Amino acid sequence: MENSTKRNLEKTSSLSGSIFAVTGEEVEERTHWKRKLVIRLYPLVLLLTDIFLVSAIFALTIYLHSGVDFPHSISRRVLFAIMLPSIIGVYMIGGYNYATDKRQARFVSEHIIASIGVAVVVFCLIYSIVSYGVNLKSPRLVVGEALVLFPAVSIFYRYFLSRVQARYERGNAVCIIGAGRRGRDLYTRLVKRGGGHEFIVVTFRPELVGTRLIAGDSTSPLVEAIENVTFQSSIRGKYVEQYVVATEVERIPEEFSRRMVSALFLGHKIATYETYLANTLRIEPPSQLTMNWPMMDGFRLNRSVSYDRAKRLIDIAAALLGFVFASPLLIATAIAVKLTSAGPIIFSQVRTGHREKPFMIFKFRSMRVGSEKGAKYTSVNDDRLTSIGAFIRKTRLDEMPQLWNVLIGDLSLIGPRAEWVDLVKGYEERFPFYHFRHAVKPGITGWAQVNYSYGANDEDTLEKLNYDLYYVRRYSLSLDVAIVVKTCYMILFGKGM
Image (cartoon, rainbow, N blue to C red; front, side, top):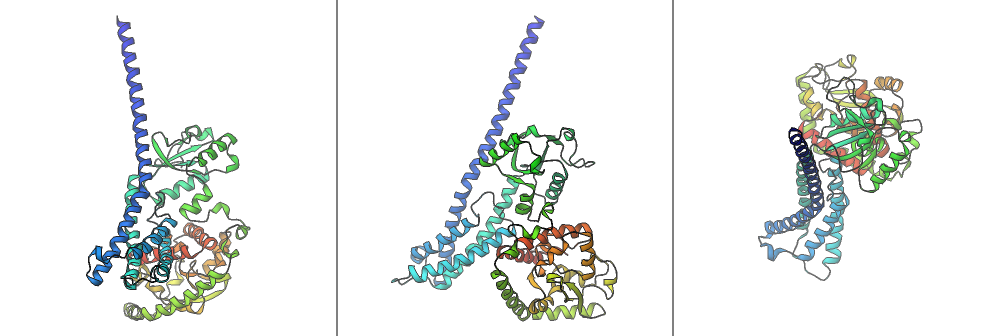
């Protein structure tokens, strides 16, 4: 009797366990099904939103100009001529793609560039084709306002939508394949970047299984066996958003490589360490730096010089306009510097420029006289700063006199930071490939400046070098606009030093 009862309990327990297992799988499957549904509906919802916004903005601008109600004010031809290019422009930059991070300056800059192109196309369509033989109700000012307002609203609401999306995806995992130096480096970078992702780290080396990725750091993930990677939707119930191969590809077993390539063709997001750093974190992978680096495919200096010439014209125009429109600010800053500390208003120093040619740079003085004889690096709350110095540094007002350097050709508006010649000599001795950053003209603001604070030590300098070399290799109109967007954000919200 007792044995019979025991067998019944075991059966019940086994049945209960299997029920819970099935239920767990069902919950996981239901979660993934909901995610797939959200991803599929996402483009449609955004498309309908954009159609509504273009129509509403167009109608509103006409109403504000003429006071005519919506049905009587709409020229369907003009509306269609505005709407179709606008939607195509957003589509071309990934504005309807769920995976596009619309909070990034890259997306904002591409949206701005696309909007300029859309405006040109729309005006050509309306005033050469649509208006042919027809007396249009819509004045040019209304069309222009609609073409300015829609991109602004689109950028704004997509930014907040991406924030909601990031909260929704909190807890998704990034799977790092490899627990060596590259795996540790990638994990450290992603943790600093933030984002709420969890990390799954797997290895081909059995002796590392069960250890911490970073020895002595109890918050770093435990290293798991490579067998846990089946390239399904999830690992241990965590949805894997991205697989990153952070080990040398030639060391991966052939059978695993075959499965990995099959998973890539099936739509799983898989990237190597180098491509992930370049395309997602947007730095130049340190592992790619060799003496042959400038000969690599995609190096910007091997392309047409057309953009370089256009960039120089933009620099001259911006410098002249800057002097005109910022003259009250220049005068006010000069007076503030003079009244708050003894010494000259302008600080000058020899910096290393394009192709290592030295030049004299000019800035509003933000430190006490003689401070350059002290520490080489500027630190947070540096006691050498004058009472107004911290403010003009944070708002970048100290760099306004550099417009003169831009005008005479020593600087560009955008490029790697021009460093003090004494520092450069030491950097080139300690850091191989540091001289590569001088392959382009230095700038007032740049990719490293907007992504990393002022360097406080050699480690910071090396990290900024990775950003500078990314710019040197890949600089373009879209990247320059992204830098301008991020610079404006830093000035307006007081970010950085």
